[in-house]
Length: 447
Ligand SMILES: *Cc1c(COP(=O)(O)O)cnc(C)c1O
Image 1 (cartoon, rainbow, N blue to C red):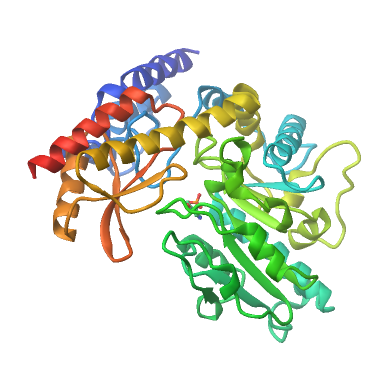
Image 2: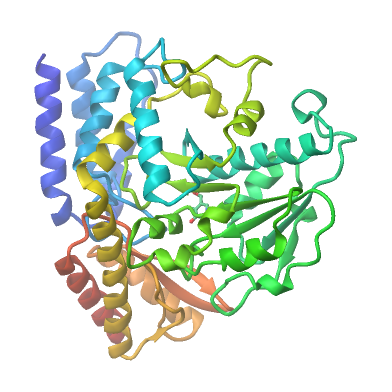
């Protein structure tokens, strides 16, 4: 089929050249997207002409976040093996709902789940729910928590709903991520009911400030603050709050991966004491969008919370993927995850995490040596740098973004404007770091 040859050629060119392009597309490339915005014509168009349109106008307008010099948000690239596996899965077009619809999807989800649980040091019987990202991972975990705690009170939330149910207290650190707030609101807990615990200067929950707990309670801890990269003290938190009526959930959208690194796993001390954990694969595992995991210690609870009917499909020979997730028909996400883990191996995964942490330290040192203020303790992959007052800092961020050597976003930390550098990509080389540092420093000094 010529289409696939054409596709392969275009894809290769994109990947080969992405490092030479400005990381953020120029205004004219974005302007030209208008050629894709036409009234829908009457007649069909040949597939290769469609591919050409996408490549001619779409490719130049992409953000080169899969390359080595994108440090915005917390954005991973996609490992070659994961990208190829995802393309293969697209060719296969498997429905990842039932094993009978796709034995390969079911098997690879189960195998990757077992690998992940062991890599991260989670309790032995923990199961994995393959979802779109950390927001849905948090949502899925919280639905399991809600079900378990109410079941303990003799209330079946799946059939009776939340109206008139026993109350569940929800506790989270004051630095909880907005998406966790969204997940809590979607499972019916309400943003304004969340009891927020004070945090220290890095954004870590202060365990002894957690109020005394009565009745069913969910405590949401965070591993990896989106700004500072800091970790809540999980062991202390669990020691303080755990009992049969308390469920501890960990939002570890990127930070959970520290558990896979011998150098960094001290940050996740106590990880095994929690009940559920949410993380992303499209962030630090460098799997293509979209992919995340909810890990739940109690399989039965997850099954009941996600059940379509009162009866479950027995998993005698194969996993039935839809029983672990909110969806029915769905992308076969385990395929790219399996490929990423298989390609990296245990050492390769640890090396990727540790390399990015080292590169973050180098950014912090380089900027500090040039006279700029680093606002956080750089223990992981996140760096917050301040260039002066808010106006100056925001101006410099804008110029760095326009320069195109690299891309970083802005944020606010303790009332100070800051540029946030997040190093989360296998594709980032030490040379990318030096080149980006040079661009940042010369732009900031020129200002
Ligand atoms: C990115 C992030 C999320 C949300 O993840 P999505 O993949 O965008 O849904 C949640 N929590 C933290 C700490 C994050 O960094």
